[in-house]
Image (cartoon, rainbow, N blue to C red; front, top):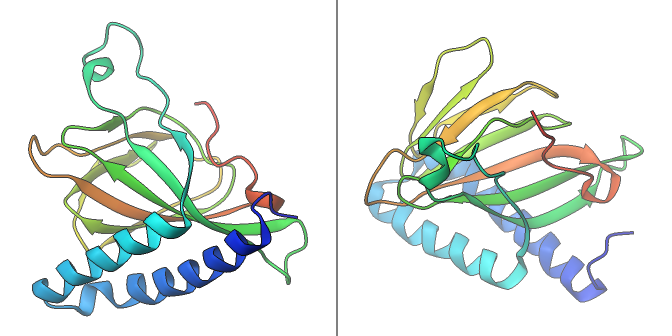
Length: 176
């Protein structure tokens, strides 16, 4: 059973449903509607989120070590009844200006949906990509995620990550 109290589980379920609906239609919205939708996502996160982890620190002495870290808030974790032992975890990842997330892996599949700003990301074996609001990227289980960053010195970037994890949210990040 999830570690959240029953009330928080219900609120998280409502938040997940609302977030899934919002994320699904994000790319179809005009700019003004995207701004009000971003406020809705902020409201959802402030009522149902709980901090889960921040990105691991960059190697000491590297230029990346001086950059801000990403922060992650898990907003839901639901068991997958048709896949025993697995759950789907949804999180908001915030990238302050110039934030950097160093190399890491995820134990399960991950889909990221960019909500605002631009996120540059690179998986092992592929080129770096610049992702804008409404765009997505996918990470197969265990793939080395070389980095993710917000290269903008002024604006925040934010994305929704949907993880297929072990039961009860399982670990979301593994060392490289």
